[in-house]
Amino acid sequence: MKKRVEFSTINIIGFVLAFLLLFAVAYLVNLFIEFDPVYIYSFIFLIAPIYMLFRGKLHLELCEDYLFIKWLKKPLFGKQPDYRIHYGKILRWKYRRGGRGPDALIFILKSGKKIRIRPSIFNMKELETDFVKSFGRRISEFHSNRSTQELMEELAQSAYVQKLKKEKAILNFLLILNTGITVLFLVVGSFSEAGSADKIWI
Image 1 (cartoon, rainbow, N blue to C red):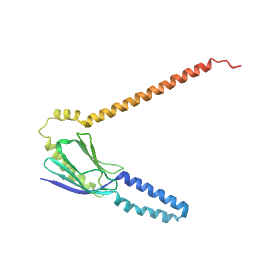
Image 2: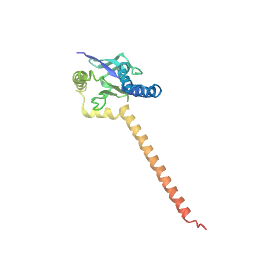
Image 3: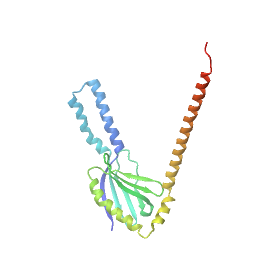
Image 4: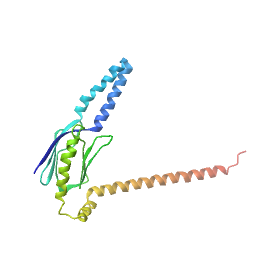
């Protein structure tokens, strides 16, 4: 049985940047025109059209073996394509509650790709309680005939884990390089001070 849901999303980075730019514009206008504070704060009402620009609409559909992700309306600067993802290609997934920020529905694929969907605050409750539970059951059913060891081995060999290992190796190299440079400067500095202390000034 198919499960479908349509909901609005938000491009949070673009939205926040546009909102900050709005205040900067209001400040610059005030420098030259000297608006009354009441009129300056009226700029806040422009948040509605900005929100609509960075708002998208997404269609998710659970089929027997696939997850369909189709954009009905992409947000401004939105670059994510439509997806047809086999459940076997999904390495991990989670619905992350944002706390101070927006919630996010995250899919991590074996290829190493991460798909992040941020639902609008107006419909995230419906998505969380309905679609996410259905998706969780579908994934569990799909992997029900596989052992935990088999899944862990597949996880260890996936491109996503290899990508994490590569990033960790690069980070460790940078930390070692930084430590080496710091030690080198300390050694050179100590020798310089020792050499200057041997000089006799007349």
